[in-house]
Length: 111
Image (cartoon, rainbow, N blue to C red; front, top):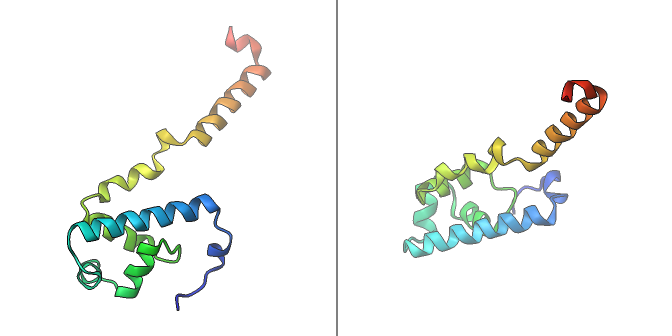
């Protein structure tokens, strides 16, 4: 049985669904390559049970295991884009709000 972690108990449903979809996609990639669980697990360097947990979308599986599976698919280069600052809409909204507040405090600077 996998270790329980308190952070897994409060994951948002969207995060759980995303992990499950990622795991399912990785399982499809493995099957399309006609690799068994045992072969794929050996290539990643994990146990078959850990690979099964990854394919189930278990949030307790380490990020490095997901990265290794993506590497086997030739998709490890996609990882940095997941947190690309230029795509961080929340941070952009904070920047816009702060700029508007600065303009409101110093209206002559805007002219």
